[in-house]
Amino acid sequence: MQFLFDIHTHTMASGHAFSTLKENVEEARAKGLLAFGTSDHAPAMPGAPGPIFFKNYKAIPREIMGLAVYTGVEANIMDFEGHLDMTDDMLARMDYVIASLHLPCIKAGTREENTNALIGAMQDPYVKIIGHPDDDRYPLDYPRLVEAAAEHHVALEVNSGSTSPRTGRKNADRNIPVYLALCKKYRVPVIVNSDAHIWTQVGDFASAEAMLKAADFPESLILNTKLSGLRYVLNDSERLREL
Image (cartoon, rainbow, N blue to C red; front, side, top):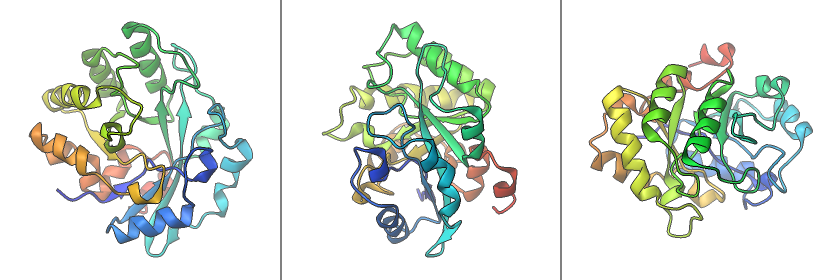
């Protein structure tokens, strides 16, 4: 199984990550990736950059060291209706938007409330990826979540970092197979990402790949196995034509 891109990565700008953009790009290239995305945390995360950081994405070249570079954001879901911590104007500037639940930004609710929060975020036209929907600190109704992902054409993430022995998330190794089975049944695409917070993690998909293989998950539904899979998650039609 060959993965061609990793678009959930963080730099020191997120406030709790430990590498530069250059270090992350260099590692992506060393791992043989063809495309790379940087997606620092949006402003509600403690220590994260403000809007001016994301406005200045225009300073980042579209290609670095032969690698196609995309600029996105991991937006924070702020309530159980799915509102995000970035304005529509800012979201429109992003190549792609990941929406995630994070404890510093929203306390966990009931299974229904947490699921409503993710489904509400899916209804934002700029949101194309739901980040790490695998954490039992935020219990979820996976049949409802997968059904909504299919309806709104949003990819659920298989986050390789979620199963790290040092992760703060709970029971991802149990939850990921549950939604993979549902995505397989209903033909809902998934996207594999590292969620790298240090350069060594960029392009490290080992645990995610093991779960995909154990689930006998079809490669046709894994967006990273073909560059055209980026079309599913990118917002900008100009960028789509480059693929």
